[in-house]
Image 1 (cartoon, helix red, strand yellow):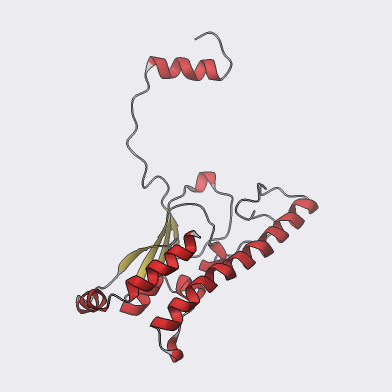
Image 2: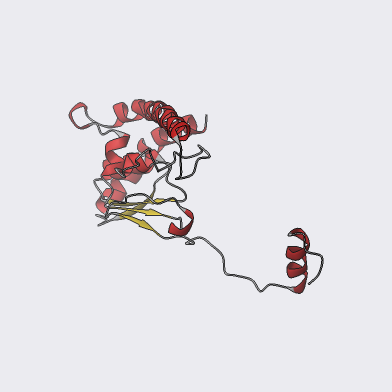
Length: 186
């Protein structure tokens, strides 16, 4: 339902020809777009502006970006597997991959109507192609908490970008940590 709403809003956005014409006249050199919302890519394609995609979390879309994800040691998102898989783990990872591929195609289908309506027949982009068209992918994750995987030169980790400044640890916080960890003495 959420992606249906995004597709509906995207259709409305791309119908705003006065705003799109104004943005086109500005002749932007580069845009930074939300890598989660497919409409960001469609809007940039409509404007003809190259873009950098920012993804706010983990590698849910790695295959879309062109990043290899060997199923033998790169667990699929939400599979609850680690990079140390036995045969059954790899089998589960393969089935999870196939399931995620089907879901991905269903999500793309939600935007097909929008693409058909706003792009001419000879130059209709696919969401998958637009993902690969990004000049740079920025992921707000830290390499120290992500499983090892091969990366492309146009993929960068910038973990902690949206993290707030650290606050000083109080004595009460320290006591809470010790009590929570099962220690009774400080």
